[in-house]
Amino acid sequence: MCRHAAWLGAPRPLTALIQDPEYGLLKQSYAPRRQRHGTVNADGFGMGWYDPSLDGPVRYRRSIPIWADANLPALAQVARSGCLLAAVRCATTGMPIEESATPPFTDGPWLLSHNGRVARDAVRDLADGAESACDSAWLAAAAFQRLRAGLALGEALAEVVAHAGAKDPGARLNLLACDSVSLAATVWGDTLFYRRSQDGVLVASEPLHDLSGWQAVPERSLLLSSPEGVHIQPL
Image (cartoon, rainbow, N blue to C red; front, side, top):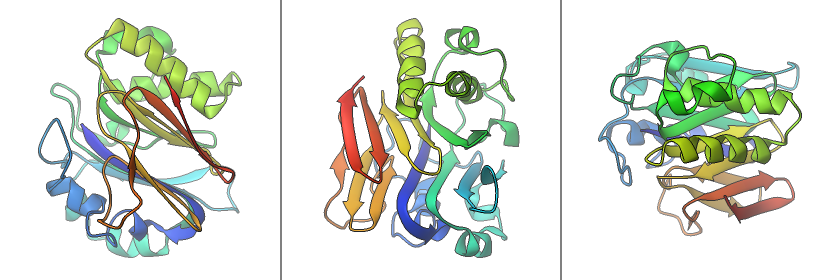
């Protein structure tokens, strides 16, 4: 399993997801409060953000624990964007621990993270290939293939989750993706929360702090977020 979080709204530094909140991803890497599978997330971390001068997202990921990267605190302070995504990884048993298996995955304008597990045989026929042998990389490849074919962000995630979940009923398929102007997330087997504020919305596997306003997304739901607001629908 993993923990992931995203922000869409007024520009903020990545520290808003990682170090600043009491229960940010740094804390969730070694002491998650709501994680159902696994106890620590020490098998890598990654983060992505958007710079208006570039065509696609900027990504930084490592296969080491997030607390072991001495460069991260300063980098997260200066990496600032209106759309942020970050994750800490707990590798599924048997999956490789390598940077190519670490979220977020990226293709074109998209960033994607997976919190969960799925049999690789349930997703291999959904995509032409993946950058890693890990289950999450195959899910990402399947979503990106559908996005390149023209599906909207939420539609692509929903289609991949429906196919993978039908082939592997025990799969946990919490996906979180963004494209710089919108977010989409699925809830399938683990927790997801969101919190709206005056300048944007936070989406996370578990609340990043104890301030009021966090709302749980129901199981087997699709969350869509854009500047127009947050919409939740059944999967």
